[in-house]
Image 1 (cartoon, rainbow, N blue to C red):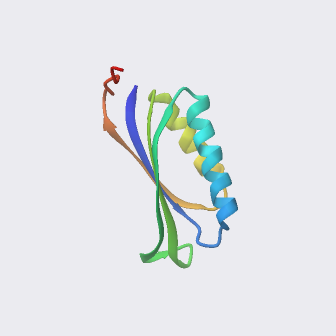
Image 2: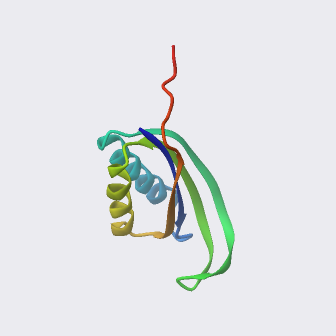
Length: 102
């Protein structure tokens, strides 16, 4: 399994409940495909350097997870389908994740 992070730029017009439902569906995709969420980091509402879809603000969320490589394609497919996500980027953090010894 590899370690990835996905940074999402969400619409500022989404309500907190809608935003949480969207993130829940994305984490469900990760878990369904054999991945494991390590951390969900809400950066909050930020001003953008340039307009994205004619909007100057956006809500940032960072998902850190470990997963097999084919999962990333499925996750990004679901992100493209979802309403309310302006932009996203996925980065591989580590090739191999060391298993923790209990």
